[in-house]
Length: 114
Image 1 (cartoon, helix red, strand yellow):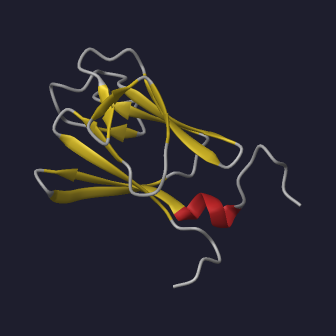
Image 2: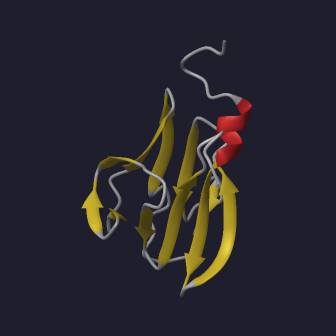
Image 3: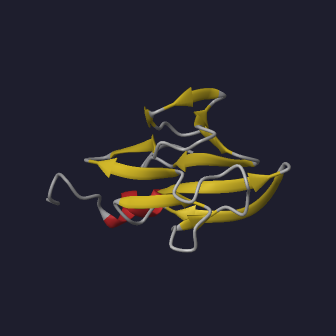
């Protein structure tokens, strides 16, 4: 049995962010780390080329089997499903908006029926 604070490999591969700009998909990222930074700066895991994104804008982090998005005191805010948030527990289908980018959180439940 895996340690409760870590995801199994199958669960890690199941969660991802689909990044869109102007309605077009521009990238897709697997959430394969416990902390993923999002922002304008080159050292971010997900880099957004947008003047309305802060250098270190937001972070996705995992606690047990749940993923959260945390605004890192950005100037223009982080929004989930059009509501400004500080910290938010993500569910599959949630859309995170940062500047002109939309990041859709997708989590396939392993073993779920088709």
